[in-house]
Image 1: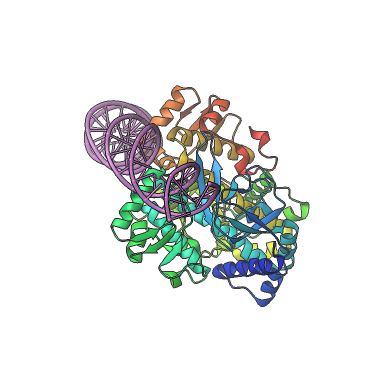
Image 2: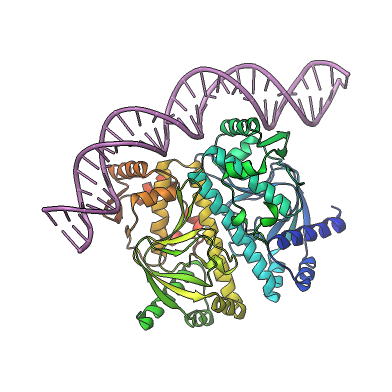
Length: 251
Length: 251
DNA sequence: CGTGTTATTGACCAACATCAAACTTAGTGG
DNA sequence: CCACTAAGTTTGATGTTGGTCAATAACACG
């Protein structure tokens, strides 16, 4: 579907993302732009990759929102991360052949698939690119750690506030949020699955945050009422996102 | 302190560990054995690296038990992983300069520090080694995901059982557990901080597991009473550890 | 033996889950 | 433009897992 503009958009998204976490030389950017991609669309709720699969490509998210999740024994779901355009949520499949979790579209989505072989080639030819890609997967891990700490030790209020801060800063860092507001195209049940809470409780906490003026929202559009208080409520410290400038630009 | 035997032990530990998750060529092993290390000891409870540090070396654990942890706003602690000999818990510091968490010795510990410069050199010279190291950090991330799912969605009983399974299999896979039994040199309060529970509750759950014959222990020595039931109780599936043979050898 | 840490117990409590119903909203087709 | 529907949000009532506090018992170590 519309290969020309979509592919170049894919490449620009990727470069924007990588430049938010590291510096890229001209050569590196050129090499990245030469990466072959195959665009595919997914509808809301479709699985992009499934636990147990052994994919031979990585999916670069071009448009839409995506999550990683596991389904546990009793049929409960835990979402382990949300992803925004520019992310490659299954970059890890490059060296971990069997998926230990699934990837699903939370909105209608456009994904640019890049063959593992092409990624292998570009990384072997260009040590700078191994570094950024590796770094990107390490930042994923840092985010998992932060979530783990949150689910393990933070209250429901802190968790919700923290998540809002995280999504906002990440969107900002790739130019996908306006100052003070952003799209969060996710149901409260999905938030709950990411926060280790019930959707009922998420709803109540969101109401508290609105009542206290920290945020407001209509539909899936979130407006930040008081950034400082929201950060405080979420015990949020950007450090763990390892953005290029330490994230100072966004806080 | 005793450089000769300690260093070679460090290298053997590393190689054993890496061979549990990937195949290594002779060249790769030779290169790894040439890695310069500086051995240091830490006492129980000492911090090895601290959140906010920008280490210039990676620590390869040679002897002892180590954990990664974060301290949150209200002074609560969340342990995010336990590490056993052969692990390089801060390998990530290679591409994530500022530590977003701390590393502490849970027992008297021996760590072999490897300068980042040396790791950079060995990886640039040997694509096989980038792959294993990268893979190792990806497996760390997979473990975080599994813990996240556990803390988010599993009951206390499941979490405790799951953790016991995990530690057991990981020790087995590097030859540090006998069949059916292993050392777990960790207090119940530390387990609690890893599981997102209170130490009181961990104690009660452990008693249940003993009463039901799934495990038994004296001091810090755990004996598995019924492996199948323990796995079932913990909803444990080795897949996420991404061991070389899929982990089938250990289950 | 004493002393400090860790494990265990009991009583009580709170955060959050569950269940179920009502209300909104956005979309769809007539 | 108006039912009609399905998804999502909100509310209330009630239940449970696991937390907190505090005291006691076991150890381990010098």
